Length: 69
Image (tube, rainbow, N blue to C red; front, top):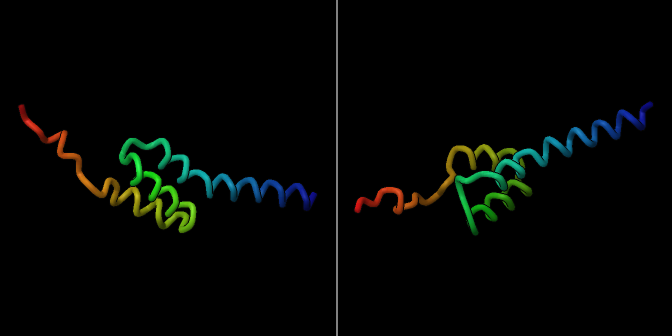
């Protein structure tokens, strides 16, 4: 019974760790190298990086959406 609880706890911890990584990978807020940088930061710094991602990404604004023709 104790082994089963350890397995369930490990799976739960893994899911909590992988959730922000999946959310950033599926997001349209960033792309290319910036997305890779956010993913690596989230992998190594965990939830703090994901919170910063939600607050700060994208770092550069796209000028193409502000163009008028």
